[in-house]
Length: 300
Image 1 (cartoon, rainbow, N blue to C red):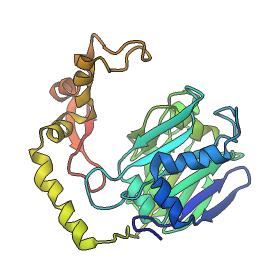
Image 2 (cartoon, rainbow, N blue to C red):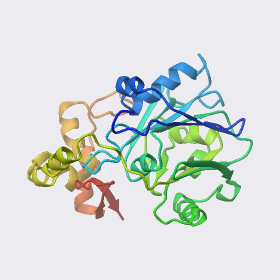
Image 3 (cartoon, one colour):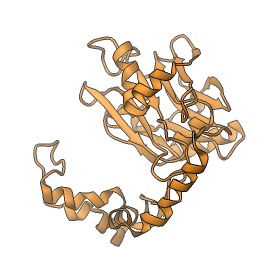
């Protein structure tokens, strides 16, 4: 198997309550690498033409990539894809945090979800063992509560939880999928797709490691980040102001999505900028696995 991959994709059949492991060949990984490309392979192959985004037949994919889980800044990312309930077209949602790396440590490169459970369930993936459990006791609870409950149930405070919240339960079409209780895979309504399948949450914990072809060479390269990134003005701005640091530059260029993309500039852009957040409501900064940038905002 190619380095950077576990060589296993987990397939969850919620209608049939069936869990299967797929071991794709190495050329599959070399062709698609991971992320949205890998997710779209399964969606284009298995999603029926014209399917309703909230139908059980809509395929939901959760994919890491080759570098996910390696100790270097910016690599703990996960892509979630399905037909979007907002547009009826492809939904592509990306997020960070610790869940992506933990999924790799647990032995899987991605998850393909099909069907719909008869009642709310959650999926546990603990060191390569996957099981479905009743989740009726989690319905209606806030994401922080669910996060704490599932960590207690699996007996490990370092477990990572991916879930949908009350917004998705209420049918909000732009609802997100959330990890770490407040890290959002935003955009395109993937939270509602997950909710339509009654897959309340996924909790993962693993103690594996991502295999690297040249550990010594990688270690040398990884040390360049802590040396170079703090001196880079763009990265410093990203850490200081978060991803909202791009609001004002985009607004100036006329590329800030405004009024459902009818316009490219927003009169009140300064009020939603990273700079304004920094001056008013920012409490602290947080980070993702092995990342020194700390672009996540904690506000009050």
